[in-house]
Every structure is written in structure tokens, then in C-alpha cells.
Image 1 (cartoon, rainbow, N blue to C red):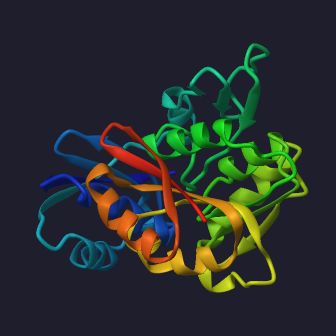
Image 2: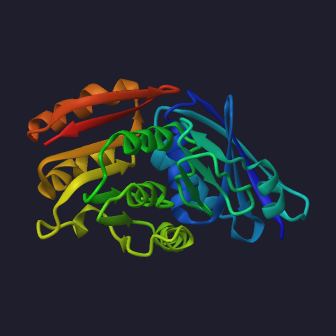
Length: 278
């Protein structure tokens, strides 16, 4: 199978690198991404490469950023095997081992989650997912109802269930992520998790949650926070990530408008995660 690599040089790099990953990943054509100090490498099957779609993604997501890119056709090889060579498992704060099917099993950790990520976000490599997993370690999950909004691989939903949550719902707007979430839920013996395809519009007041997890991005969180709050039980927790430390004041102001109070903030590699109580 032949692949193209699109090599982006970005100035400034952030937040435009992550915006491009979200945009190109949402199309479902680009298989993987590698960060560079000055930009990003994006991989796509040669037959699926679309120059017009690439230019549209740049125009829609990179206003204020100088973007240079070149496209190279790579030699034909087993790229899945190559990916497996470089993909590592992650030990989250010594308590949770997040691994792919080809990684070794460990008996010396409290929780182990097997994730086949495919194109979905959520393998614990990114600082935002890592921090969200540490929140789940510290919050009491026993008997709770939990919503994982923008679930990606469903790694957060799976850990919530393993930690004793009674009802867990995982929601993602992208069909490939939704299908991947269902596969990972079954892979981890958590078949009771309900996986839904949709966005915040699918939420209704008939389903109330003790804990809502949302690892998405700043603009979606600001837009959808009201919908999250409408589905929260009194005394419930809203834990969010997917934004930079500098974005926290904006999110805090919005949360306080909705009657939430901040319970804590975590920072890792410049990214932030915040928890609010209702």
C-alpha cells in the first residue's frame, strides 16, 4: 500500500499543529501524524490524497499562521508494522497501563487497558488524555453514572467502568471513532458501556450524570458546556481537557456563569485539565 507524507512547516506551530491534526483526522483519510519541532508530518494513502481538501483544511484552520508544505510519496511497505515498531505503551502515574494489543501484559499495575487506536484520539500519549486518566484515579467512581463526551478510543469510559461506575456512556461525533470505541469497549470486557454516535445535541435531561468527562478542544467546550451542565446531577463533577493552560481563565469564567465552581487544575506540557463541581 503506497502512502504520501505531507510535511508541514508552521509558524507559529501552536495551536495550529493540533488544529490541523483534528481537521485532517476528522476527514478519516489521514492514518497517522508525527509532530516535529517546526510542524507536522501527516500520512495518507496515496490514492486518498486530495490536494483541494488539504488546501481547504489549511484555509479553515490556519488563519494567522504561515504554512508551508510539501508532499512526498513514500516507498511501498507494511506501514502498520512500521507503526507498531514505534508505538509504545504508557504507564499513567504508576496505576494504569495503557497498551496496544501487541504490547506485553503487566500484572504489577492496578488497571490495564488495551486500546487499538486506529484513527481515534486517546492512547494516553497526549498530555490531555494522561491528565484525564489521573482525574479518574482520584474521583470516586463506585456506583456513579458517567458520560465520556468526545470519547475517541473510549479509554476514559473504560477506566471509569473498571473503577466501579454503574452506568457509562461514551459519545463521539465521528463515525470512525464511534466504531473504534465499540471495539475497544468489547476488547476490555466492558460491554455494558453505551456507545453513541453524535454530539452535545444528543444529550437530554432524561439522562443525568454524576461525572462528565470532556477531552475535546476549547471552542467546542465553550459552546457545549451549557448542554453538559443540563445533564449533570446536583453535586456532580465536570472534568475537561483539550486546551492550553492559558485558556483556563476563559473556561473558568464560562463555567462560573453556569453555576459551577472550580475544584482543581492540572497542567502537563503546557496543556491543562480542570475540574468543576455543580
